[in-house]
Image (cartoon, rainbow, N blue to C red):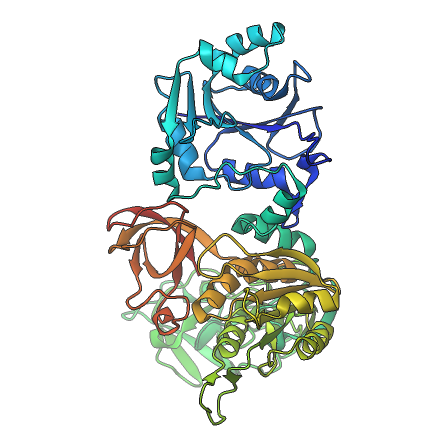
Length: 595
């Protein structure tokens, strides 16, 4: 069954002092975050505001109140009247802790009721996190015409199902902030720490990144994997002459008429042609003659076929041929592979190894390409030392640098590696300044959480970085800190190895795809059948390491802890578990990110 979502965006709060709908959290309008959470659940999303076309958000219907100034009931009425589906979920734009599993439960309970609404233990109702059947729109209209704008008046006229606190808290895992909304300035300060949704984080990063347009000339041997910055048209035919595809004898096909092993045809061998030898100018081979020819040799004028030497007696002065040939049998035409003027490469094509062969076959030795992207990588933490040095007590080797640099190299990105940085704000800031001068994207690990030595927040302030977001709604790797510094993305990942790897794959790869113009750098998503059980509940969205084989996905053996790296071996996929999911059972269909 399809459902509609109605989001009330009146926004004028006397207590807050400004239009709440225009507030931003993690770089996006607060209403956009609610829309993003609604999209997977609803076939239709309606925004009801104090005037239409206030936001201009694609894929969303915007309408105005019909009964202006009569509060939320007026918005509910307008949304129900507009909705195409009989069952609608109503919420407000300023409820940032929107919990999709609870919404799904309310929708499931709406089959025989006009209204399904959560109720707290003190009797307080949540009418702006509730499900309404379209049939109550008529009753709402009667009330509004009488200037009776209390939603409770509507409840007195409708068949209402109340979802008690014990029930809805069981669904939310005991969370008591799911109905929290913004009334005061301090409420807004609190919600600024809410993790951004992964998809919104990716959109925000990619939107702020510009594709590299600078071009360079590169020898074709160094161009593989890069993006062409020009069209290439063939300046010659390939092959540049009629040539033989095999070792044998070139002749006129008429001269082979009737030839067989029982009745061979005898021809005079008057010429010998090797690959690379210059053809005899103007010397057409006479009738009744043949030319001994090697693979790649120029077929003499007058000849229109080649017989393989196995079908002859391989004579030197004269040759007996044992089969009859057709015109142009075993004959490679001039331009058979590539014609002069043919387009070989288009601007924007990613150069693969076959391109190199095609281009070199017509004499192209260098090509204009989009300048390759550069990434600078640095890991922070007093505990880190580089491989190859002595390991003092309390220290660990820096594995993140090698892992991320190796992955960047696999993806065809030039990488600049920096040694570990100590937990010092000024020295980290100085390093990042230099990294931004040398690279198109700066990646760090560590120092992004809330510990006493998580200094990247102070570094952002010191460098005046334009912060895009801090914390993403996923596990592992929640405390990702991202911003723009000197018009370049600065992506600061968790120091835990698996967390760093996961957030690199999910956040950095889309940035690299945008920078380079190479869509192949994006990961892909698909459905697969799970083999094996995952016995943990997932209160938040979780990614776990796995191996994808055909249409089946297997859990990687070993620990799934964010600090464990070894169990990443043989991992080629991540299972994407939605927030609020129970343990996964073998045989279930799951969402998979293919790496």
